[in-house]
Length: 370
Image (cartoon, rainbow, N blue to C red):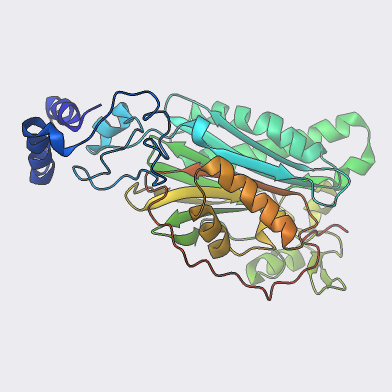
């Protein structure tokens, strides 16, 4: 869609476009030679490198974005917010999952189009078997969809869905008659993106979400571990205790390295809860490059800025996901390693030739259950 046509659409809906955009539209109409659009399907086949130059396309402020952009405008959202918003396509989302040195990959991940204007992204890192992660993978999206029918606030929707999943998992395990499954559990980090602008994240455990803005990593989640005073205090008030293993890692009742999870029903009575912490943020596609969801096989061996820097060097999110998961293994991770990368408008804008890594990292297993 041309900038001129988009301006006319916004006018027809009563929006006032600032003078800068109008001047750009006039330039487009009067001198098309300034912009080298091509109708060749080969040149327009990829948003990330449409003309084969090796330079990825980027979004910028309205009227001055890269003239090779090939990402479609999300028209309903653009009209609603009065500014151009790129459509986040699931086909552009990158993901990868490595088993590491474990016998089984207990990580699960999912991306989906939930409604016309809401996208769903989730990672689950199971422990004590994959039953809890499998249950979340199968039902979390369903419960979110159910609560969306009655609730507009996405933070409330996610909080209710997490608790509903936990309750129904407990019923499922009890009905199975297998008491050993009471010690199975999973982390859960779920992100909803509405209208390409409103990003809401909910999390329990130590899987993470980060946003790359202006080339810098911004954490959207905080790990739920006994190292947090507020979390440790809740455990102790509920009658539990914290013990440290031989690697100096704190565990609830000497067993669980996290203070919140879905499942782990044998520890619910001593303060391990399934209620998530949530965060809401409005995206600015001029500055925001991507969202990354990771399990601890990645984020216990690479810090957030390292993850951000490595992804920023990659051509597209599909390549970036593979590079990150393999990098974690090379750095010594023995755990399952999973990552989802969701590209936003500033993808490729903040590449840097200076990528620094911390080689003082500990080359021990990032696993917590060994």
